[in-house]
Image: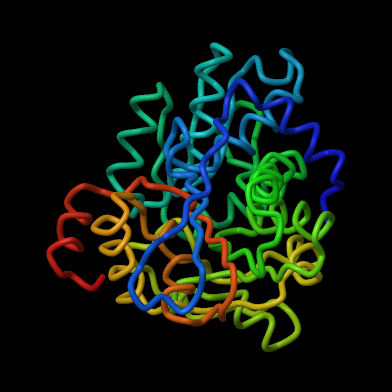
Length: 315
């Protein structure tokens, strides 16, 4: 668990970088719960990742980051690190998987970052080792850095400021940094609130790990939900994640696509695949009744993919 004092310090530290995003009620006919959306898609980079990236980078010295910043990301952490690098006047290099969506690659370039494409296994190895071979600069881990998790935890503080009594908070699970950060804040201040993680079916390692009692490697099936899901829960993250998570749910890809349509049509909210996971879990009844807060983690979706989904595509 990340200490509450570290999360509170992060809120002050990142105030000039991240915005305080709204918590809004989703009015959907026949919804099985009172659903609220925490709109991290409204951050300057359209993703929560700016919180953790800014908090981690701002704690380093100018000398440590003089050669530039480096991370490994499917896209959103890339933008967070590129945003931070640009604000500090240093270069940013991002190791990305070969299937990274064009919307996120374009955003990296727009922010002045350099993307280096590698095969998925090489990209995942960079995340596991926390090191990018042959690339100079300060490596900012996309999720297992405690400073990144503390920055993410500021979302939990804001949720309880706006809604003091949520029954559950539903979080899309990618690497675990968002989950550990938010859950640390929520469990410190309101331990009775359930923490539920949502994953894409075919890429649901937390669901498998909770069933087995330990991390296992799954048969990973990629989808347009590129910001969540992986082959396994990192061994370094499991001791942090396990005590904080009450439930994990695997969401079929067609349900994610349907939720993207609902968010766009009913609430005029643009969510990427990972950003729609938590609302999909709540709308389909997998998270139970009561006050359910869903983290809309980002809105960086390719325009062509969004158009396909809005016209009826299921994945």
